[in-house]
Image 1 (cartoon, helix red, strand yellow):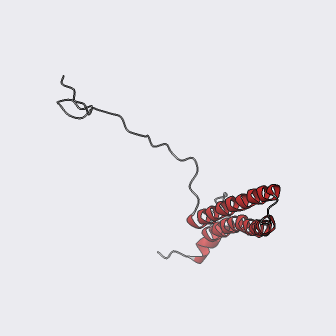
Image 2 (tube, rainbow, N blue to C red; image 1 turned 90 degrees about the vertical axis):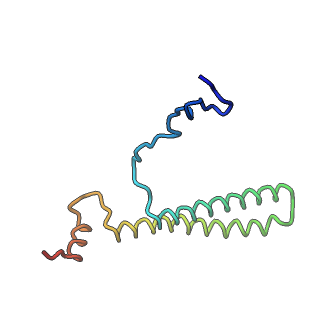
Image 3 (cartoon, rainbow, N blue to C red; image 1 turned 180 degrees about the vertical axis):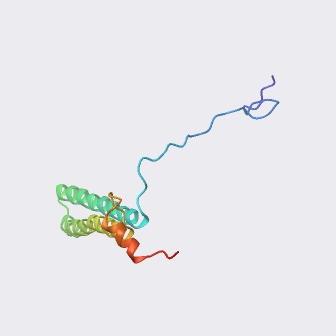
Length: 120
């Protein structure tokens, strides 16, 4: 069999398996508003941690910038707390609006049935 430099034979390309296999997801992905709030929270946490590290290093160096960066770190901590609470609130609001509950005969599903009656 004549083999070329690119791995193909004279008959055609080399037979290969798939690059990856799909595995079933064990839990559904987060709704878009909750995921957006979570991304914001992660970015806020990362920025606040970077500010905290800069504050620490500037303090060790004895720089005059340590105090302004410390104030920015405190403000970032407040913003990060708000961001994490925003994820929690957004998740609860999404659950209430869309009736996602664990018990099939819950009042949330019954209220949804009452609000949108189906006529024959």
